[in-house]
Image (cartoon, rainbow, N blue to C red; front, side, top):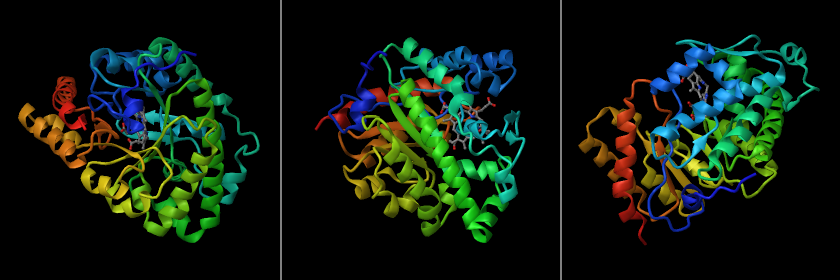
Length: 352
Ligand code: CP3
């Protein structure tokens, strides 16, 4: 497998000298791109793309053909791990993820084939990674990812993307032992799944903990972070950097500052400067432009980028990104504008 030659993103993560701040965008392959919509329609929907390695590879590369981005991210979803548990995942247009089963009781848990965890059902992801490594040919790094066990559990227990979290929060209160059993299983399969992505060729690993912010400090440590620590300790290749993303990052920074990770992904409600003061040079930061800024004119965009760079105020250790995934209502020209602005103004911050 070829080595990755473009080290800007990897150098920024390692806090090495860089001549500009690297950038990639969460959900960079997605519905704001007309070429994505086109191919998705041909494939018969989102999972039709994800389950077909040739198409998933093509979709991953679409934003890199259009823009000067510094990394690719495998086109897939955090919820595909459910397939290892024999739970079928589908996506309903305008509604989001749907499962054919939920886990809300011991009985539901026992009904799963929990002794036969096998990553084979996700071979399409590993095949996509291998195709991508070949296509990228060492020119750009490739990010692979998983969801945090807690965040994936919120979907599998609820059965859809209900924003009320009634069942999972109820389980935490009334039957924490069952929730821990589910989290243990998800942790186990996530470790195997992530390690197989590493063996297939990813350069960087990312964990999305979108709903970690629902939990108070002690719950967060018990039901989310303890499992992240376990995953981090089980990564087979210690040279693969780990990015951990959680929303409401600033509220949790007193806990997060002690984490054993390589990069912290920050949401847009947080102040990157405040986070930097807590974290110092322990690990790198990623983020955190508000996606709404991409609806504004160039002057406002420039000010917003400048604000983040000034607030971060350090020559390396920062990967630029949005604070959430890019939304379908963004004009792709604004993404190009953002990348140009960053390339124009970041070098003066990167000089020691
Ligand atoms: O960032 C990337 O480009 C890589 C691919 C990726 C997707 N989802 C593709 C996707 C990644 C890393 C994710 C992560 C993900 N998926 C998260 C964590 C990050 C976050 O957004 O908070 C979560 C919570 C999910 C679960 C999920 N996937 C939901 C709730 C939905 C429906 C709502 C929505 O945002 O569209 C998805 C769908 C999804 N995942 C799409 C894409 C491109 C849209 C699919 C479509 O075309 O309809």
